[in-house]
Each structure stands twice: as structure tokens, then as C-alpha cells.
Image (cartoon, helix red, strand yellow):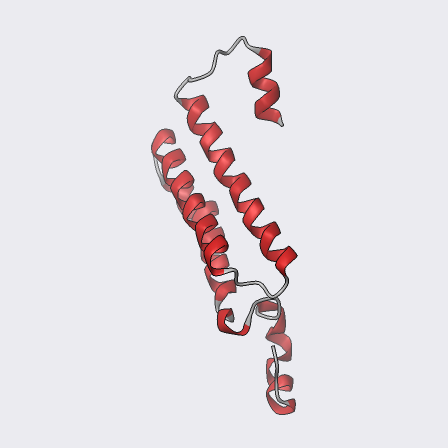
Length: 117
């Protein structure tokens, strides 16, 4: 991001919020913060564990697609890392849904090993 000398002094305390994003995505940290708030404080308010798992899965999938399609980061490695981490969250919710649905055999050690990986 490029700043003039005057605006650079005024924005200096806030640079950490947008310095890693492309100029056109200066607002993306607020979207990222809303994502975190939704997962940490709104999603636990859903009373049914199965419904919570499904909502979490679809939220995680939507944010994964958002990261992948918009590519908001200046650094490609950071963007790839964010996308892959969001896919890990999708996979975690998917596995939680499978466990809640009792899709796997409880006695099979291979299933437990795969889930832990």
C-alpha cells in the first residue's frame, strides 16, 4: 500500500489492520474479524449440536470460497496459507458431522487414526 507522508503519520497506528492486504481489499480485516466472532461467539448459541455443525460447515466453506476467489493478500504465500487453513476448518466440521451422525464404526482404530491426522 502506498501512503503520502501526511496520511502515513495519521494511519501509522492502524497499518497492522490492512498492510498485508491488497489496496482494493483494505476492509478485509473487518470481514476476517466478523468471521472469527461468528465462529467463537455466535455459533455456540445454536442449541442443537447437529445444526451447529452444519451451520459451521457451511460458514467455513463460504469463507474458504471467499478467500480462494478474492485472493485479498498481497503475498501469495499468505493467501495460500489462509485458504488452506480455512479448508482445514471445513474438514474439521465435516468430520464432526460424520462423527455426530455415527457414520464411523467406534471400534475401528484406523478411523481414529485418520481423524487424528
